[in-house]
Image (cartoon, rainbow over all chains, first blue to last red):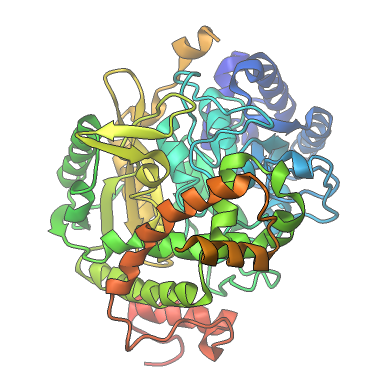
Length: 475
Length: 78
């Protein structure tokens, strides 16, 4: 098998080859380091690369596997971490030069668990500064680029994580999602991105943006790969005060592709919001496919949906400003200007505004639960548009001129507000060859149904297998 | 938000209000805050905000609560 082909296999495919000793982790890591070397000048997915450490881990994994100490399906699999997850002894910038020399002295829980599963860290990935933005633009470490067309945004804030997976620089990455930062870049780059229920994955050792809406989760090429990561990282963590102590299912086993009788709700308000016609068309085709697979599709109404953006933004602004208050007071002029504005604007959210938003959030949470008594999952678009040129601040849909931040997060943010699990899977391509994502969301701690529905759709279509070969050949 | 209130809150937080950037921030805040006002339309009279120290929100309690909301059953009870 050629080096590039190795880089484009899913983690599940690689794992089967590694377990059978048909390829070794050393070959896998070498192939990825070579891929990174050739693509990084154009994609800029990484902030910090760890080639020597990765090779040492690969040799260790090879030895373990040869001596019968196979740790499971992530053993020898290359992954990248958004550069806001602490790794002991490795700098953690959070996407800002202010922290260019900050070196944590402990590992985040997620990295400890991935290392214990035998996964091999290739490096720390680029992000929108402080994860406070959805376009993946970063003037300090360089913008992230969409592998389907490097002049376009990769999306954010986990933009480097998305471009690295779709281009074959990493097999898996771990992103974070406060308003859509896993799902939006995954949709714009043609990946699967999963945000599990709030409390499912530990946030310990992760730079916060807004504590009560921050989620951690995998970005990968297949739903199976997301399930493999979930099996490795989910579980109670006493270091995270919001970690939930619930039994952990085998997420991989939930991928039966059987969705006969599944009740799928299509929120009518999603299609009253601004959306590009091509995105709408492909998402409806995907919903029809779920129906062909045996699901029953119902139109449902979510009256509080139109308040979600205001409630979530109020909470996010106040929490982000509180978290970064020392930085704002002491180093504001060094913060990336658009992020500085967002951080400082939080000063003007009063305590009353914040508490009212938290009360409104409970109302929203209960209405979300009620909605999911009528149906098992919700289906709709992940983002209302495809990727657009870097530097764009507003987009026109119909006769409306819309701010890109609100636009890109209009479908994802509600699931940060209620904390429910939500996934994006590729569901089509626009006329100009850009990926479109289908979002599926479920009840709290019912990740298995969300993963099963996404897997069933994925296996019945070919979108997830498309790769930006010709686009990257020009790079 | 009145300019005077804005400057007073900015000063209280510790921003330098003679920085030219303050004008840009004021324009931004004037644009953002009205978009959040729709929360006032909601009837919140019966709702208390969730508090971090609510006893049912211990890790175990939170887990049980979520499991109950999902399955309608409490672990260990019929």
